[in-house]
Amino acid sequence: MRERLTSIDLLRGIVMMIMAIDHTRDFFYYPHANPTDLATTSPELFFTRWITHYCAPVFVFLAGTGAFLSTTRGKTPKELSWFLLTRGAWLIILEITLVRAGWMFTLTDFHMLVGQVIWAIGWSMIALSALVFLPVRAVGIFGVVMILLHNAFDGIHVNWQNPLGWLWAVLHTGDILTPTNGVRFLPLYPLIPWIGVMAAGYAFGQFYTKPADVRNKQLRILGLALIGAFILVRGINIYGDPSPWSLQKDVVFNVLSFLNCSKYPPSLCYLLMTLGPAILFLSVAERFKGALTQIPIVFGKVPMFYYLLHVPLIHGLSVLFEYFRTGDATWMLSGNLFTATPPADFGYGLPAMYAVWLLVLAILYPLCVWYSKLKMQSKNPLLSYL
Image (cartoon, rainbow, N blue to C red):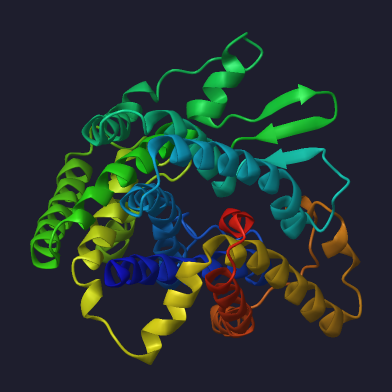
């Protein structure tokens, strides 16, 4: 069991490290540059964004897998349900408080609220807290059906002022809501199909009750099948993504268009494109040994601790860099960074951005080592919530 969990920690840690690339780009790369706009992007900028698409699906999927694995260590369905319910509620609170403060550097201005990945994980855990009383196969079928069919409802739009319009926005469309005067809420991560992704990840945990050689063969087949399904569905170009691909100016940009799947909400093609390679990686992950693997494994053991630290760290470094560059970083402390108007000369190229990313990882690593050891040595159950 120790080796199996290590392979999952390795994958989760890798995607956590990759996630920091995207958030470093948010704060350091030239402003208002859209990496997925094929009319203005470059291949290197596109793939800087594209590689980070793996983060949210893998993070949510493995959260479900971790929930299942806790049952193999003696946790009863009732105990697991309570943990998922309470931790899910806790994550939602964190999203609108500490996570938001890391992005905006304010705890008092609530004019703009955003439901991001931690919000989606929180609600998915709450949903899973009810599903765990069903047979594992039923939970898996529920998750897969939600993933497969949710794009069939893309054409349905309901005015948020309709009595159920707000619910449809939160569940599927992600349309911005105005719950009260002066307050806007953007459900950037609509809950469908993220709830399905976590449910599928929960059922996926059954693979880890099988002998390693059997499991890895089945994971390899499953991963390749999902990759093949992505190529087929995306190639047919009729269903599976609200943004069909199209012929571009050359072969490279044709490939970029093919890979440019919708994340908000995550389309069927997007999830096949990301979860397929992730599962394929798990089929060989246990072969990777050595000192270099310990870095992502450490991050993978404490993902929430890492997440809560990395955004304010990147934001703080951005403020520091701007202060030393110009002597004034006031505009970055406005509490609404992404709607602020940056100076015309603000921003750094990709080499500098990647250098800052490595600096971020170097700062976070010893902190995560410390917290990982603390969790191992302490019997305080509250630490399992962070």
